[in-house]
Length: 110
Figure 1 (cartoon, rainbow, N blue to C red):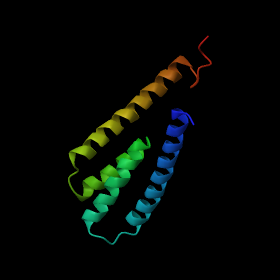
Figure 2: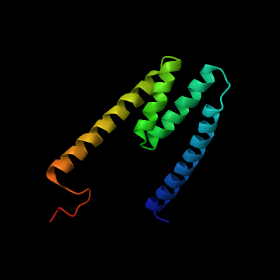
Figure 3: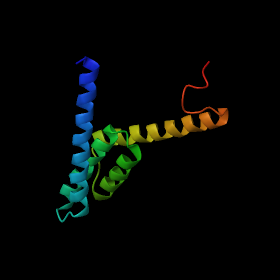
């Protein structure tokens, strides 16, 4: 097995584990009767996973929920700003592609 194949298998497993964690956290958040600090921690963990999976808008949603509960730590502020930047970059990229009538592939390159 090449290093690339090993890395792919590892990243696939990580993604699967992350999806399982998200499912567990979704359940904990939706049925939580825990104190708000536990709920805050559930949102934080889910936001970190969602950010890692490039689900920036979902991560921001969790961060917004965290801000309603308590002040967010600097590590989460960083995730918030990086998510906002990624979302804006994606919008600008899409606008450029639309204005130039370029498809989202390499077919326009000779």
